[in-house]
Amino acid sequence: MKRGFTLIELLVVIAIVGILASIVLASLSSARTQARDVKRVAELQNMAKEVALQNGSGNFSGCTVAHDNVFQCTSPPLNKYEDPLVGSAGSACFSGSIEPCQYSVSSVDGLSAATYEDWKVCAFLEVGVGGFAIGLVNINGDTFRIVAGCP
Image (cartoon, rainbow, N blue to C red; front, side, top):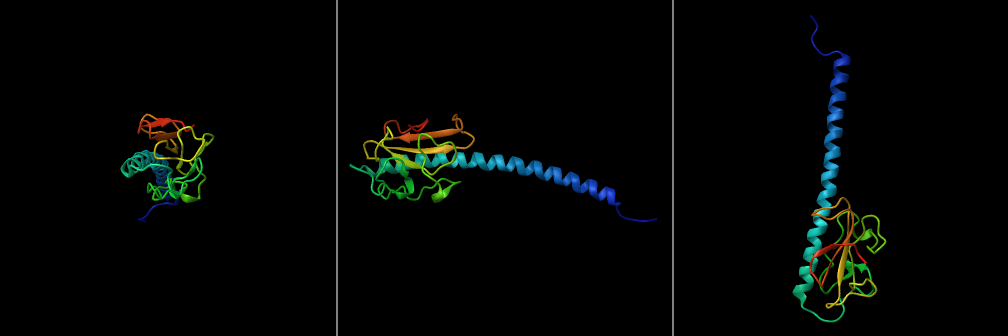
């Protein structure tokens, strides 16, 4: 009597393992994307706290134009924040952004550089989280709340 598996039995087992692995990887990819959105929302809230703690006046240091990359701001110290997907290589978010982009800072109307009295930080959500849909969101000095869009 021979012992072992036939070639067909081995191929069936390998196919089943492959199918299960692809299902697990697909669900992990979705979880990673959602985790990046959760991180973006948390970082927007942390950036608002950084600005509030500085209690400064005048322009932000290092961020000199509308929709400048947040990681260029040295005061308030926002230079430690980068989008978890695009990092410092990504372009800054602006009203027409349709994919993940680097956090950007500007005045609330989006037409000039940020000041301690008039600022907003924009980000792009990949899948949406916390009641927000896919797309741009911002937090600003008027409300200190995250809102949809980035005008």
